[in-house]
Length: 299
Image 1 (cartoon, rainbow, N blue to C red):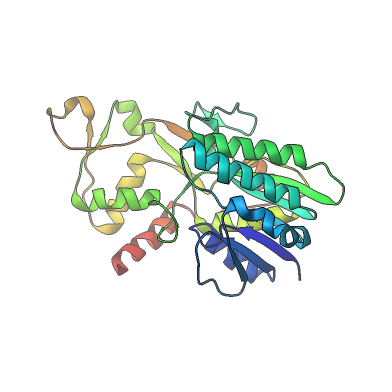
Image 2 (image 1 turned 120 degrees about the horizontal axis):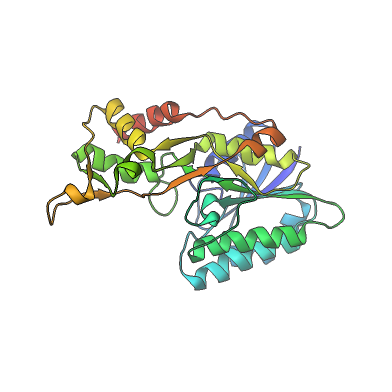
């Protein structure tokens, strides 16, 4: 049985990744920031900056999946935990692949279709951390005995939260739909075209675990599909029985309350990963929203 060292196993991505590892017969040692009740694995409670204390655990593993992140946009925690902590993990990495969860946000404000060759343009410390960690992996990778480094630049996660810091994107949009709030856009073009690639938690988990077997180093984009904000909002409202409301910002009266949506179109081309890993996404928008809305109605 292969042993995997997993960081961030108690988070919104970590729990489905742990479930996928166990389903495939892997043995998992999981680094968690806070005490968590995770079944089927051994847990270590520590910060990323303390990962050096567990160098032996990392060195004995047959692969690493590194998900943990402060998710901060502040310099101090990003440098102390994300960048330094990733460096400690890389210092201890000896066998198998090192799979790292990066983000489509490393591309900055999107311009057209984003392939892995698109220049990086981080705009905040969260993005800078992802870029720096990707570079650390590229520098550390070519050493005897190791596999390859695989940063996956994940699209926007469409899934229920509840296990990590901060709301997931769908959880921030759904209440506005339920209240009948107006979603505003600057232009007609933005109303029709602005949106983002997205990834479902189970697709992301499969992609991360599949990456343990890759022979080709990353980075790779990973997504389940693409939707405009208008389609997303209309689909949520249609499935939940709400009425979607849209407006152009210039047409709203002074002082009117509205929901300002991102005006960009963030499309990541994931064909390189699909081809290299033989990967086919299973969670389209309908599947993800059906599951999400069911979870909201249970609360």
